[in-house]
Image 1 (cartoon, rainbow, N blue to C red):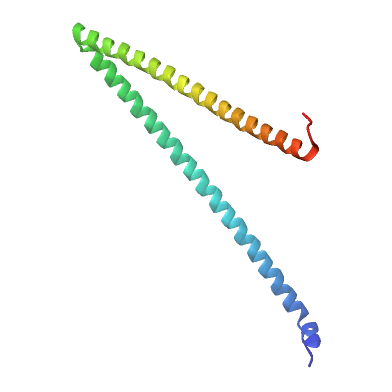
Image 2: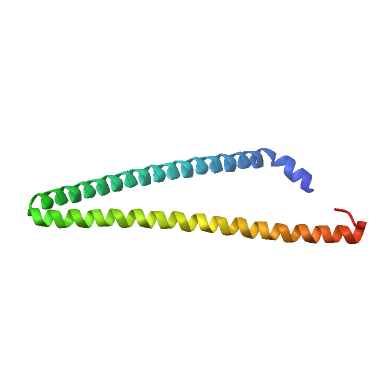
Length: 136
């Protein structure tokens, strides 16, 4: 018996087997997709709970700070206010210095680009003079 005869005699069982394998693959894909979606949903829920806990923690911390500041004496409050003002001044100075440094860096970059372009331009003009004669 040849291979063609064997395939033709067993065509339906082979065909049904292929269909069953395809159906099983589709079912497996659907199950895997559902599991991934469930995992993503659970992960999102956990992140949301974590964020809620973090917010509650921050609120409690702020409430404790408010309570502590109410118990301070006037001279202690003045010291804290003075420190807060100094901190604000230092923050503004740091921001101004950061801005100045950034502007100076940009100026250096532009100057460097300009110098490179001028050098390239002089090299191009020199090459043109050599190639074409005295033209500008």
